Image (cartoon, one colour):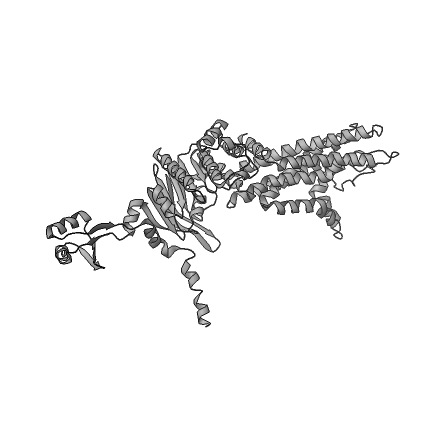
Length: 311
Length: 250
């Protein structure tokens, strides 16, 4: 479990992370979502003790990262797949990392096999494709068989096959009872992977909860109904639910589709369409973070009228 | 011990340390050959002249090796991975300084004895050899000086973090600054007596007496104290670097 409490980090004038409080539970994949520049990577560095917070704390299973003995055995992380010496072989990269925490070379070969890089272990990393680098990063995170795993944008630049592989891996890691904390600025990817969500914007917490609640809370639900017998349906719905009419269709809220179908049947109204509208995740996310985008497109547009003024 | 093994794997699994080691040996032993060949037949080849390549240029390349051992870690961000694995940081950095110093020591000994051996082989009648304590200090002393230089370079690498910057500073300082300080009116000579590489030279060359080769040091310290002083300077630098690295965001 990862617990952050009122975590704050400033770089000069900018506050990258602002009183951020959240929890990532064990046995779940927690998606860490936010627009570019929202403070995701900074938060990850704070969790790992690489940066020192100006205020607040973050604990891993109740202990601050810097207090962990042989931390790789508790927390595995891939913050950036390019954090390695390009002239060193993949296996040697893992060997030195393993040796820091007294992890035997046997484990190095195990994780290489796990990510399918055994055959290129001796090849220098500069010859690795992006996907192979990503796999090596995941192998490094798995070295100490840790209870807690952090991945920063693990699918960035991967082909669909690679994405599917990572998604599957993250889910199986969580299924084994581990805490899996994955950042992304791509919501659809998260939707297929994460059960829990932490959404931040401009360093502040916007949402914490389950993925399902996130969608429910932030989207307008309703049922779209089309019928040739508008009068009958209108009479049946009045007093039962709120509804609006547009383009020859009813948009009903406050009743689910089962009940509406029943009402329509009892009223003798033939239905041509009865479809629940669920808000898309993308829409929910955009709604939430609209206020919190660091470099909003609107800001760029506002520069345009100045040329019109000149006309 | 784990961390020393870590640094050993890091250092020897990339190419640049091997190249630096080879270049150091080539400079030290190659210069010995050139000087032995160029010394006129009627004047004997001296010990300081034989070792000139190692003491003057070998030191510079060793410091490049040591600085790169740190700055490439910053360049490729493996320093972050290292700090992630060793959150207290200092143990990892001390292990690096120690390992690089040990490697420099070994290279220094091979360079010095290699240069001497070649000198003796090329000029068998010049009386070159390990006859006195001073001869031993001259030759075997190169290893410890290399080791201390390596620690200095590691410390500077931690502070500067950029390969080009660290190497430029080290080379300019080693090859020029200490000599230029002497040009400062009145106090220049006094400051020069206490500058680290000048003092290290005192340890290597001993009391004045050599006719040929590099000028001996004007440090007032005895050779033993000179080595201790040089080591002390390196350790102070390293401690400052450790303090900075511990506080700095990685």
